[in-house]
Image (cartoon, rainbow, N blue to C red; front, side, top):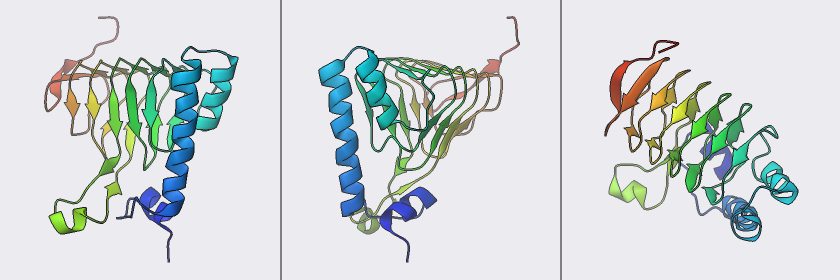
Length: 187
């Protein structure tokens, strides 16, 4: 039988109150407290905290505190990823972020979701992965919903709610986010 953590990472319904998951979220919150309260600016100490908090990211990851996540170890970043202040990543499943991705203030990336059935929702939740391609700009206050893939070289307008996949080279905005136009290199 799979553990609750294995179920979570596989996208199956799982019990978030599981002692192992609860302990891992507490460890994450301890590191977040150090980053967001004690350090608050990027220093050698805060870079060490980031390497513990998000071990699957290169040293070029830059986060402006405060920052929030559930586990940290399910966030996978390429080179030159930037999170502005007040970003949230609910990382029950992998969040894969490409190279040269910029997230404006208050961007929220969710993998966590809940069953529509009220009785099931009382006891379990589930997650769906999120993928953001290379060279993307996610505007401030945008929300990326569970299971979404954003292609390469995309721009997501500020305040958008991305509920469906966005193809490469697309400017998308709105609630729900819709394609505004293609992005043509050099324009």
